[in-house]
Amino acid sequence: EMRRVVWLNGAFGIGKSTVAELLAERLGDAIVFDPELIGAGLRAERAEWRGLDDFQDIPEWRDRTRSAVSSAAVEHGTGVVVMTVHRRDYFDETVGALRDEGLPLDHFTLVAEPEVIRARVSELAGPRFAVHVDASGSPASIANDLAVRLA
Image 1 (spheres, rainbow, N blue to C red):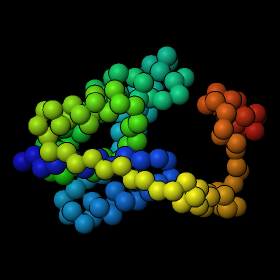
Image 2 (cartoon, rainbow, N blue to C red):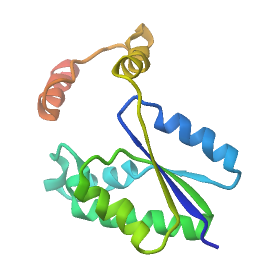
Image 3 (cartoon, helix red, strand yellow):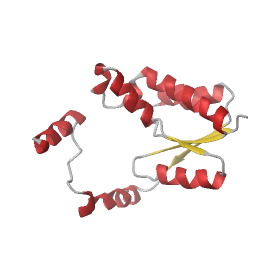
Image 4 (cartoon, one colour):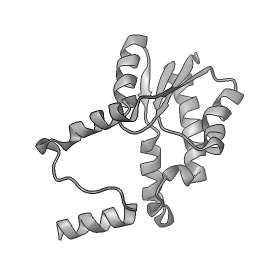
């Protein structure tokens, strides 16, 4: 029996994954669904997708996410999806398309002041989480930095 999908959107560090796990416990029969796993799988599939900054740019990601979320809702009851989608067209192709097919879907965007998000992310600044890498550059420059560190 198809139940519903709860989609949690919001910035990195806002707490989507933590909230999703706690919400799934409270809902009882819910599963947490992370479409990033689909993105990782797609990147492994084709060389031309490995260099993309955002796997959401892969049309197959949007198709597979929509279909996997729909299947999970049918098979498991309630699914709590943890995924930041900020582009309107990608939102329409995922969240909007799931609604269009009649799937009961509640969408929530978690928001907080920048200081709150910085404070949460700053927990990663402790020595336990070192070595810290400046991630303000492109993914390619970050990968190059890490490759040099690993050489």
